[in-house]
Length: 241
Image 1 (tube, rainbow, N blue to C red):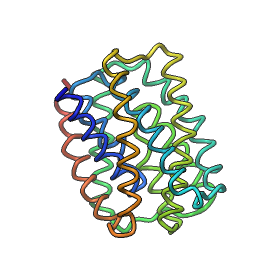
Image 2: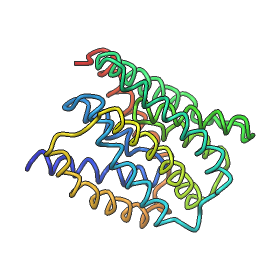
Image 3: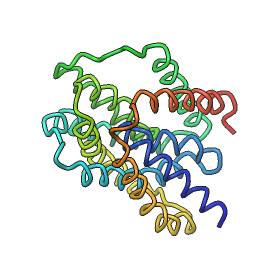
Image 4: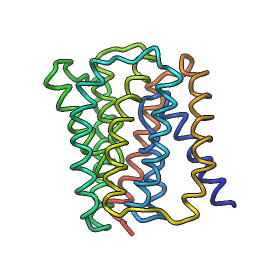
């Protein structure tokens, strides 16, 4: 029961941060869960929670979806997530953990040192961002940070930013979940049951985020998550077991 409550608390925090910042559900949950679960099991569990988190973003901010960006980022991201998920199914656990650690640490350093960086808003760079975010979502369960970098370059209103990120995430998550299931990935029985609590908790987190989204600066969350990336990423990179 204690483990379930801690998992629910982690889900609530990740859902709240992820809704406001446009990313964060996977990037907060997976580094913690891989300390206790196998990498692929952690990625699969979070993928399910993440899909519902994306659904809440679209439902709560549905008037703000930018369909052009959904098509540009989402369609190529969908294809790339399939290949990423296929790669993750064949990777050894130690290698996967170290790759995840390197990705998190590298991204954290980039965020900390390049605070003013903005990606060009052309079609080509948007498509490249879709490919990279989809691939990383498939292989690591973490594609939101890259997708967030691309979307932030368009200076979208926060409601548009959140809804668009959620709509793209829905497409990517469906593809990788199907790929995991087709590859034989499953969860232990107690983890399946835990979803009965985690899914509504993720909705509560999204509702809280909706109420404070205009009051909390997005950069503050990005800085906190960047430090979290760095600490957990280095731990996984140096001590994968």
